[in-house]
Length: 240
Ligand code: F6R
Image (tube, rainbow, N blue to C red; front, side):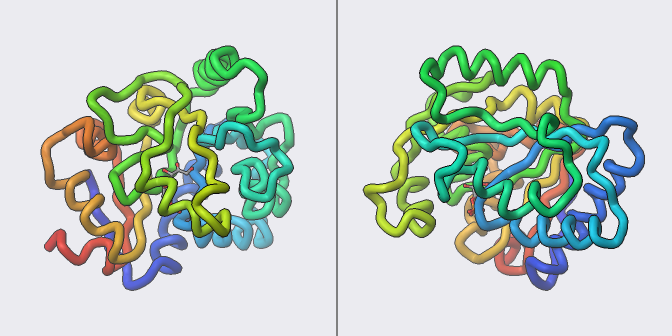
């Protein structure tokens, strides 16, 4: 497990973007696993600026980690909308190569199967992750057991509270999501986990230094052969 600590999120994001660029330029048909939330925003800003300087996404496929159940693609808090706003509409990534789970699907079990089939057809070269305050990755929440495949999850209270900032009030945060399971994350050739801010320090500490535990889902990354934690000083402050 590699750990890189940067002065601030912007510097960390440029480093992460350079690693993404390397994959985009060196792999014939690269597949990127993407995250949403506030953490990857500076990374997407850097990628957009790399695109403006000539980096093409025309041959890239993207698979997002998760989507809220009940939100259609055009809902302003959906992850479909987030990806359009922060990355897709600014780059030349073909629309048919962008995949996210459909949280508004009438049959969610079928939707999970559909998404797993897409994942099987597009093994991930580089997976971008954030981390929840409770150690979740994607929306794989702390629990007695973790799941390998795409599934519907009831969001943890901590997650709903943390994400209330995007919805204005807690009552508007969906209580369920569809998330990729841990298998495709662990099978990705390379994983970058980004974490910024003092409030992430405990989650980062138990992911990298604690035992591998289902109650700290990110700790499972310890078994992956090529993971880099990209942190700012605040998120790393209790690691030294
Ligand atoms: C979102 C996702 C989540 C977030 C995590 C941190 O696609 O997979 O695991 O990465 O909840 O969210 P932020 O970055 O908003 O603190």
